[in-house]
Length: 167
Image (cartoon, rainbow, N blue to C red; front, side, top):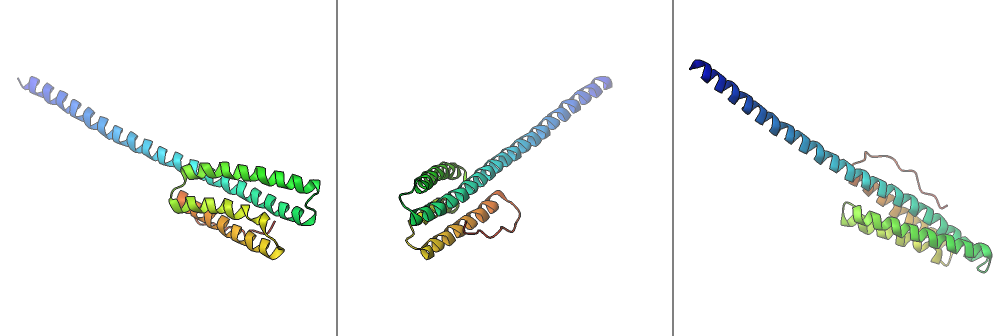
């Protein structure tokens, strides 16, 4: 009889140990999957922010070129080319903005991303060089704010951003 009890206790202990091991491993696997999903989403937002900021900076350059061409010779071929490049850059910026709007980690970040595109898009409509410079400064402020907010959203450590110039 003692042998039967010993066997039952052994089998029961094995089943209990296996059950506990199963639940612990499942918990560990679930946590690893959750962390993987969080990291994948963070990386996707990072990619969207980097692509957006890169495209917005290119758009800003085309808007500045467009302004110069339109004020030097509005009917020149170079002006038509500058307009076309600016329109293409704007379309790319809006496409990248759509991705940011889908992935961004907050309403304020989404609003500022939209404001970046709008601020850059107003550069070419300035009447004077002083007004253009003010619009560039405003666009730079929006771009800087967005890059810092995006860094906070993805949990990046603080890095010093270079000053954004006029060209």
